Length: 468
Image (cartoon, rainbow, N blue to C red):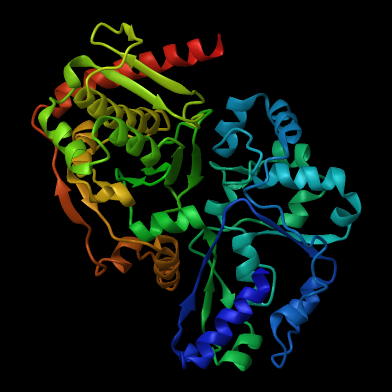
């Protein structure tokens, strides 16, 4: 399906008159954690592609597994347990690879496949991520996995940036040979294959820069810098962080940074995002965002000590469910509070959670820190004001519907000059700047520095109560 999609896309561009010869470099992104299994002998096929035929026809027999495991597969729980045991526990595995064992992560999917389909594994000569698979098509040879996307496998040591021997031994036999050596995310892999030169008119000198995962590519597209945090306010909320000194934990993910090899990025997912805010809007503001926003304007920072945890569905970060309200004395309130208090409590509670968990992974606010807001709720100025206050940093909006695609283009351009020491931000300095929409209230730091400590303490209490 992926190969056929590339055929369709390039053929459509050719019919539209796109001038492929002008492309100096290309890169791309793929959904994280998915894996592709190349059959023994596939490298020879890649090296000798006939430009008179499409890729789908040429590569039909090149894969030992036709249905690739992707991030939606959660059937490898036993393999996760085994990997964590081999590494010395979930936290030790997170310290090595940036994350505890997750069912969707590639290493656990490879282990399951090797155990359940040993013949297919035996006939495999290379395993690619979705990103390095796509790069291989353009390169006409097996492309290396980059450090950043490789961090989402439970196999890469994020500090040495090599495969972890402990994890490889626990996962599957000869895995280092099947994966190949990982490379920096800024590496030029070579020039585009002659197939694309002859079939589509690419220049022979067009460079192929390592492809990466969709989340790392999004970080590049948003041009996050040291100290920045991006908050995507969607159905679920996602937080992207640029960090220098990571502290991997049992929640969230730490990856190698895709644009600065000495830095890291972190990713946190929160399932209860806009749908929870909308539920409170419907119950407390008659379905009106104007009334919801007025409540945020008319209630004080800190909500007079009222705090809430709003987990309408089982949350990812942290793993808890239910609505839990506390007054200023940390007494749990069974009955509901006033509509205005409830509205501020849900927004403040969500953003306190985002900051608490970001700081646990090693994030810290520094001079010049920016909060970049994207997603549907980023159009609500009052919500963004609370975000600015809680993080005690200015909030900017950035209009990017295809940040991973744009980030891939930025990375391709950077790849051309990265080896000469030019930094990523010098390459993209002419890109449009995000728009400032909110600055923190003068009292924000004093109010929320105390509330952050309270929130962390009460979250532990909620988790303990959930387990009993």
